[in-house]
Image (cartoon, rainbow, N blue to C red):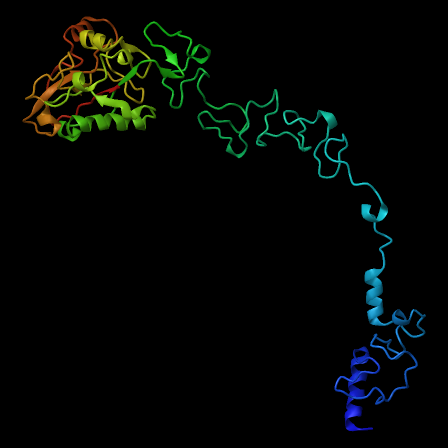
Length: 377
């Protein structure tokens, strides 16, 4: 036996079935073996561990032990007789949601009574608040993950309507809310019509903040301060407010909306009290009971208010405007008004009305902070 044949024999016996009969991984002859000659066909099919041909290639019964490959093939190809799947047993798949039977994966099933507005939905799930479905007679709304207890015009976490117009409660950006009477023309005798939770009128408020004359930054700067306060208070028409203030270039008569049919609206305080029927009533008779309510709804009587304006809405005195509202010096002064003195018709109140003291009270030094009247346009 040559060294090469001996080496091949050792290699084949070591690898067992990796070297089938008749093959030589390094080019040797199949006769160079130490084992008995094979009596089976000289094929390339795998053999058993006894050296006999595999029964899977000849179709005959093997007399030796089962090969590892044969065992692996047998286990992978043999049908699983213990399987209980519908594919192996011929059972029909489970019926879908809506058959009236509680099947796996279903929370409920009322058959034909399933309803997205009922207690069991079309997906066989229990109706719950937060599922974006509105259960009839139980839920008023359902915005799913957007349910919010504090959102105006929203839906609460209990799936009930949150604060909104027409609920009879004054809240959020509303100017008024008469509930079912909203928009029906019904309103108190000293009030105005409420439509869509807004006054059918122009809002007028006393600024909650006070300013020295020079802090206003001119009449246009005062307009901006009114708009800022309105915005902070949540008034939805905040950009339309202007200050009742005059200088050589500006005045309410020149800057305010009036004289047009569309602008001939009443004026109302934030608390819903009508102070004038229209522009003409305002300049002729003044604001009834005074502009004594701030943008935040707080009443403030006898407050000094910068005006520089005569009862007609025109400039009172060009020399008395805190130098066009740029000076806070104690040497300068301007005309000021008085917000209101009393809600009762006493002698003091009658004097306040007759002398138009709401805008024409007295002169005031520019270093003393005063408030503003802000009117919606």
